[in-house]
Length: 139
Image 1 (cartoon, rainbow, N blue to C red):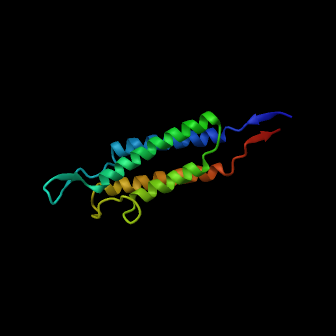
Image 2: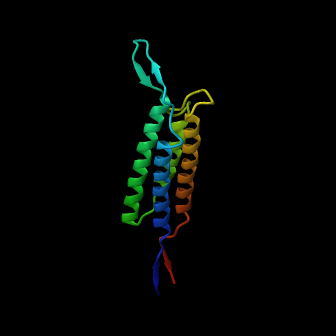
């Protein structure tokens, strides 16, 4: 009996890393947060909340790269990790669940929100796909 290694796990983890890199590039180029500042009651200026959504998404993308590399090295699946990261990337952008974005629809951060939701769905799909991967194929 010949045993062939199944590369589907590695491919899913590589795709997750690529999606994370695309998220980072998108957040730094076209899906940026608003650049405005909010003046506090004391007269100080603080970034708008979409800035903090951007920061959280960047950290989540870096964590996904680390998880992907670790699972490639271990040759293991990352089902729950990817589904969790996908749900988190969507939840972070929601005003009633996560940090959220500005309330005005025309603001630049709404592109960031849409982009993060699309990438989050990609992570969830990659996690679900890994549920159907068998560990080894016997011939």
